[in-house]
Image (cartoon, rainbow, N blue to C red; front, side, top):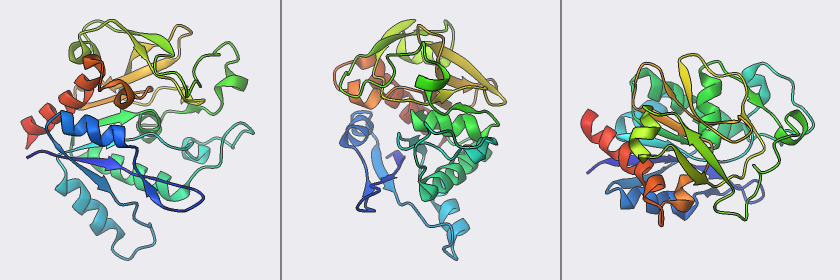
Length: 238
């Protein structure tokens, strides 16, 4: 059976590792076993060994949503609109995605996961869309499952996976890709031109979206198709 790792988040008040159930359900629907990955402290003496073991243990990874990424990772000072980053989460996600890229491990980046992918490849982020791109006014709508439309590039991996050139998406983010990372190609955009999805120019099995397909995957096969694709990609490389 295919095993898909899910990068975990941490509740800032209780310090408990957390995982929204929709990620788990979407992976199960795709026929794979979801495994919630522990957030290992970087100062653990076996840190590198543990991280390598995680990469070798799973067949694919979903880099899930979460808090803002520390701006120093893309060589910027923190702006007032940037929320307090979670250092343990930043280090764990960057370490895992670096390892995934080095061995061409299939992965799906969601919301923050897409931003982490962009930063690890040398790109940067809008730290706060309301102040840096004030014309963008419908991207932080946590209570709406279908907040706005995205347009998908024909012939892209995302287009082939979803079989769509336009589709409605969730939108609960105040950060977004600014300068695109090296080797990435933008393949979906909002009405205002915000990058909503990226994939790799070299065709590696990795796909990232700014929205939350897990929230719509139970009722819309276009969003479930992203998880189905990840499991197929993992099967092909096992």
